[in-house]
Image (tube, rainbow, N blue to C red):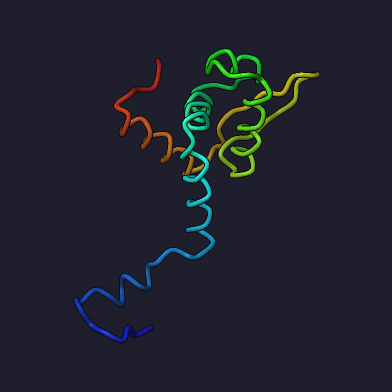
Length: 116
């Protein structure tokens, strides 16, 4: 692809490296979900442990229905996953590069560390 105007020498290489629309959409969706403070707290918690709705609600001082709503949105964005054990559902962050990088970015920006 050739750009109509040439402003600097690496433009064509930069355009060739542009992420696909699908990749950009996936990242934008994830960032949109993490733009909510409640979801950001829940996501950060689930980056460190697997937890049930009741414990997430207690830790974040939210109601269980509110937590369930946020968990659905995070799951739809593929930031978390769930598993069932009997009647209980457990949630944790997905094992992906995007989640790992978002987790570390949150900690870098907030200047917090992973618990030992």
